[in-house]
Image (cartoon, rainbow, N blue to C red; front, side, top):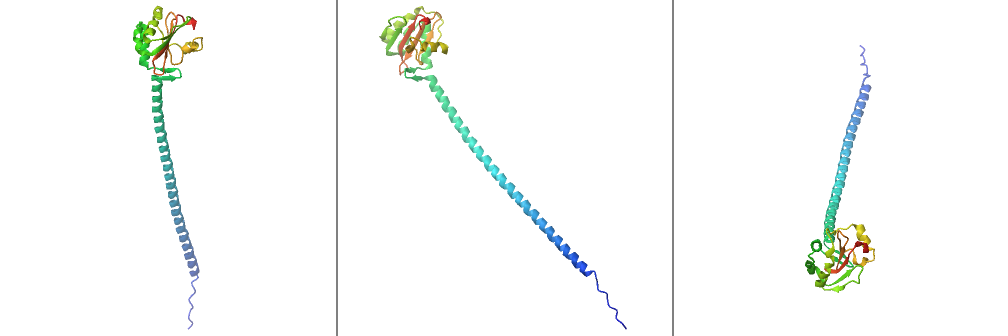
Length: 216
């Protein structure tokens, strides 16, 4: 009796081929997942690095701005101190302009005619000059106060805030030495002019008077 031979299964090579393809796909899939993970990690690391760098830059800018604000505040304080000092006393080579309170008292004495009150503001020697005359010369405070009677014919109101152009004209005229930048200059309604000069202690060291501003 003949034995029948079993036919060889032809589908086995195809199965092995499919298994290899499946393994290849799984490997590719795993590689893709790994690459995605690495990419995501790298992206997070890069963003974190940029965020830290940006935060460091902002902090540096904040520190710099803080320093600038502190310096500006210091400069403002210094500027206020300088302005206050300049307002209180103006110093030049020709003397020191006294305080605003002293200047106000001198103006009030001239406006009221109470020139005796000026004796306490005068230096030990006061040079009195009258325009278009031979002058008076060095005087004691009491004598200088008496000399101020020359202004008795002046009429109100007195102006001790003359325009800069007017003062500039006096400072370049024939009597310019009696109109230093530290002087207190006043002009009456009928053109009488008086100029007080001050020494290094802010005391009245000179008095110049003119019966008319046309003489200057």
